[in-house]
Length: 439
Ligand code: NAD
Image 1 (tube, rainbow, N blue to C red):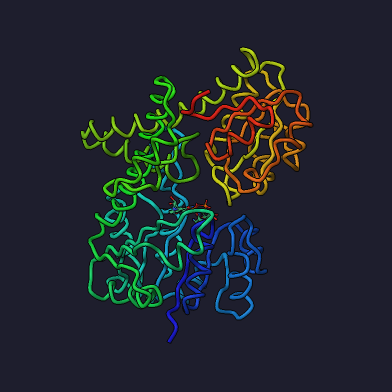
Image 2 (image 1 turned 135 degrees about the vertical axis):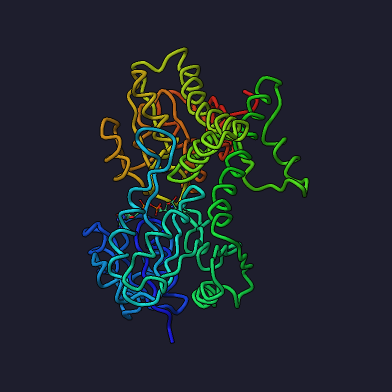
């Protein structure tokens, strides 16, 4: 018998989770308060860009294995397992996570739970959140028959489908053997394929996710700090990374120096952890994370400075062509996007900024309507005094420096992602600058 699962919150995480659970053989009902999103998903569409997801949603909606609704009553009747996948963004008034959507979803669901079920937190939360939700679940009509587990998610946008169908590991924070058994049933396809299944308690499960993000963010910022050292010492950070990455204790992933991290997760998660560490009196932890964040944000100022340097001292009244608006390639997500932040800072400094992104144009236009948003790299380059490569889409790697050279006012480029072939651009007469690389 297929497990009946609901996924509450159908954004980047939840829509992917819902489609992949259907692919794994569950009957799935996605729930969201956003009627427009629900309508789009129920029509077999995906209201954001994620490679491979549209096909999966369309296929499973067509068979009826995957449905979407705004009704919590329908969800409560349907689900044996309820995954909580709502957003937990940074609070507007500080570094903490805003858990308002999570509490709202639980408040809407709990009074309707009349049958035995397992509520599973997937959203990223500060440790201790699950423990505060547990007494709320106990007030459900089904009372003690409603159990709670935490099952953090590690998917990467741009690779979300693959990461969900075949994750590196599944973490199950549980309070009962039954909860573990239920989760093993939901993830049977992954477990059969040999995906490691780590069973732990609720507190550890919540912390695994933020610990992993803190580790990844620290690696990126450490290597970006090394890039600054390389620039001062006349060294090449790309050779350094290659040599360091061969060390098996370190490994080559998440070492790439450049403009740093952004998006809806890494930044807000290390800030929430910083706030929690501070509250617990763990100042060294809070201080470490504050430095990681600070190094990351400073990259953006550095690119603006480099652009000014290439323009002879200032970007005021200069035309700047920006390649990339999404926080990473293969995504249209512009939350805390380093590329858009740089574009915005240039605009503030008086530059005329034209931005091109292969997938994120609409989102970028919505969040930064004061910038020019154009439909191709050639349009962004037209008349530019300097070109900035800020999101490493494959399309940009394939650009022809000779062709673009004929469109710009000056052949100057900053490769803030260290992803372009510097020799090729220089051969074509471009003044080429990478972060942490010899001028
Ligand atoms: P998102 O903003 O794309 O999606 C959140 C969804 O929740 C939206 O569709 C919103 O309408 C819906 N929602 C809000 N309040 C609701 C309510 N009361 N009831 C039902 N639905 C509600 O966010 P996201 O990127 O999918 O992130 C969700 C969670 O997953 C966050 O905690 C995030 O940190 C975590 N996460 C995200 C990723 C990622 O790559 N995006 C990866 C791992 C973990």
